[in-house]
Image (cartoon, rainbow, N blue to C red; front, side):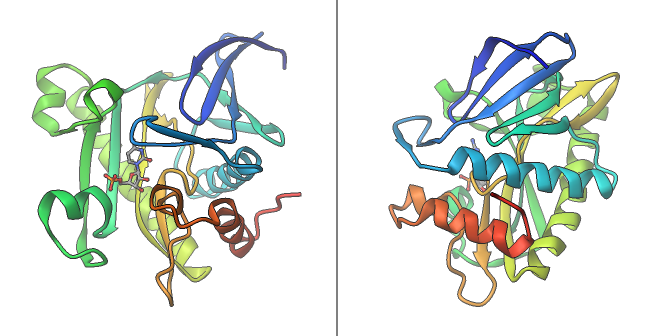
Length: 237
Ligand code: C5P
């Protein structure tokens, strides 16, 4: 597979076209950012860890019947994916209150959420990804009602699969963000799943094993990601 032009450079990944129109190459960089790119640091090995961790999770999701964009790992920090028509919306499921939910609603950090809650955000850095609802999506035509229903159902299906996977490895899946895209008339998962885009706590100590270590200056960021990978049996080297 030949890597061609850079199509898009995100905060942590770059996307390249290939010699096949319907396939893209994702390059997982070591860049780590917070507050819409306000602070950016290079964290050695992070690109490799996230690429391999993500491929492992995508495999688990596919095995559970959740269609994803992932085709295959291409190397340490690159993966081949299907090209989707992306829906500009972020879907967040929360099992435990933390982060922006706590800031917005004043609920206690660490509160168990029964049932888990769901939020939509508009993917727009200039507007700092504002929270939106189904009516905004309908009014502004960002997705059809059927696509909205599919995104919700798929995000919750991912929750069932991954909550169990992490629980079996001694971790709590606190929350996560997913994005979806259209592919041959279907809505499929078009996002990475890594500790950059979710919160994971050690089940006993509630120590943070995710990007909050970077956001809160706790250090040991990549070491925590590697610990998560190790607990799940993801082969890194
Ligand atoms: O910041 P907030 O609490 O709303 O984030 C909820 C979850 O979504 C967290 O796991 C966070 O890492 C993830 N997220 C993300 N990308 C964003 C916003 C949130 O991966 N742009």
